[in-house]
Amino acid sequence: MLKRLLLSFIIISGVVVKAQNLVPNFSFEQYSICPDLEDQIDRATGWSKYSETSSTPDYYNSCSPPPYFSVPEAGGGYQQAYNNGSAFAGIVTYATPTSNYREHFGIQLSQPLIIGQKYFISFYTVMSEQFTGTDYFGMPSNNIGIRLSTVSYNSISPAPIDNFAHLNYSVVLNDSINWTRVSGSIIADAAYNYLMVGNFFDDANTDTLNYNCGSCFNYYSYYYVDEICVSTDSASCNSTTTVPEMILQHPIIYPIPADNFINIKNHGEFEEKINIFNAIGQTYAVINNSNKRENLVIDCSSWPPGIYFLKTKNFTHKIIIQH
Image (cartoon, rainbow, N blue to C red; front, side, top):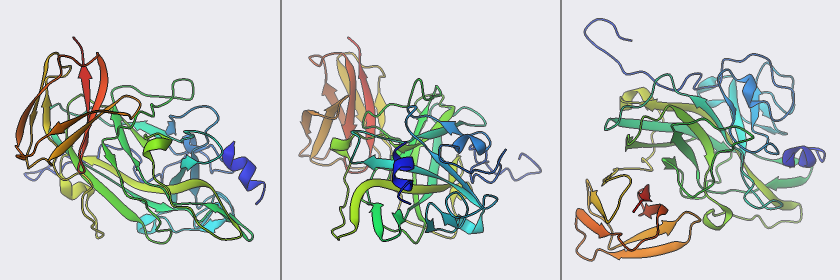
């Protein structure tokens, strides 16, 4: 609905086994019908809307006539698909007119993740040039990312906006020309079998960059997404473009749920301070780690039961307290 108003202005074989990408239709090339309106991500085979009814995640394909849902003439701008493809998805990650307006879409993986197994995750994204005539509506934001789940979501039961993602681009992304690769790795702590894309952080925890010009309205942040990968083999999710991984190491945190103590076994040094946030993004506690120990035990016996998030500059991890 939001964009409609704005647009009115405008293998296993042989000896060598290569791990597969667990994301079906990872580049959105397979489709049922060519897109001709917004809110048609379900026309990309396997993908569907994971956000509330009023949200409108979009599908772009070169089979559609220009100018709005085609490739490269997309959304009133111009953007080639990554790696010379013919399709990609598009979502709003932040909007000023509506509080916590988000667009999410997702898909069922070809097989569930194996608990304790390391997986490599990546996707490509680029900011859309959202303008009509002389008026510019778009603005950059951060936190576009991927979240894994053991359940699927839909417009009746939308994906949560609770300041947690398994992989997210934490800095403001303002490149509207070149596709940026966002990549990282996790140790699966559940048999995740669904993947969703979007900004899972609320307005208070999302950064934006406002443009200052007479025709700049800074209404919303809109990004294209392409080439999504989840695999046990890093080579399966690599390409000719390389950027630093957004998640370098993932700690082991146990037990889940926790009762009186949380044990953290890290692969590298922690920062001097570790922040604990509650389910709505408020700082609940700050753990002093002046010795930068790699293994920590946190006393949580006095914490109220619920969901918390342990966050440093390199990762965010969900903690469940159940006394």
